[in-house]
Image (cartoon, rainbow, N blue to C red; front, top):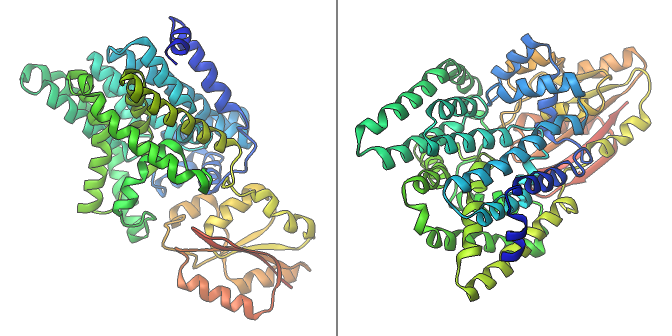
Length: 487
């Protein structure tokens, strides 16, 4: 292994890393259908600028990623490939930043290369690099801010931190961790803290306008925010999920999750030679302190622990894993490599040949397209199903139940207005279809967060003796997915 790393770890090793990362991230980039969050992205960024801002105000995320995607779709269109292209590019940049961060920590070039390579093939990093959401952009900003802090480039640190907090609200925890790391390493000499404090204060000042919007978001969402109360298991399993990914077969999942826990524990011990010195401590606090702060906030206030927001932390963890694989004793290193490398490769293979990939919404809607005739109307009792369906059937009339709501936040009123969602009742949808000689196609999915009011409405629909075009019982989050045809 050392020979392989030495061969590829020359002065142009970043070219190897960029090439490997790019191939993996653009491979099959547009093959899978979009899932709900991605179709929400598509819906937002295809609005005109004023309505897009209105929709963002009702979302739970800042505007920066949406602005990038809005420019992107105006250049490349709104296909699956085009929507995911920015994430793929940012994923490559993230790999290179891990390599750069390892070098700035004064680690050997071979360790830096291996860290970048492991990040390139890390299943979770690969998954979010093929997802039209903001997490690779968050990683780029957090890694850039960390590198800038180590180099004492305070202006760049401030700019990257502002970029992070305007990408994902939970980036505030990364900025807080970065400030804590600087305090621990430079706080004994107050003169060394003047510029970092000014830089962090400028981040706070730049964030204040968006902070006011967040207060409005919190009021709008009320108690309907979709994160469930944090449990010990939920906190612990964020680590293996955000390294080995979520697409593993049941045969491998427990073993690979165990490998993730094991190598992470060993790495925290083995990396103590550099991890707890000045620059290493900053990295340690950003990587480990951030999830701990999220856990503390979730326990003391309300749950804010979103596993995928920990992508920057687990990418940094690859530096520790790489150092451990190259700096353990000979026998221990052989064992660690024999576990970690196959685990990552199994996760990589599982990403492309998965049993638990995104559902093919386009295939799911095939019976509707095949049976559609003039005058037909789509009816939705939940807006998440609406967002998914109307991406793949954009030009058909539809009605969304006016009382739609669930415990999963979904889309709030201000965003529905921005989207121009046509609200109505089941009776109105039936009347509209009959006026034009058509029928009503009712698409719905019941989940753990489906409201009792929607379940009651579904019971009413069932009393109308619909033709069941499609129904599927699903275990996990979605309990049942159905398409009914009402004459």
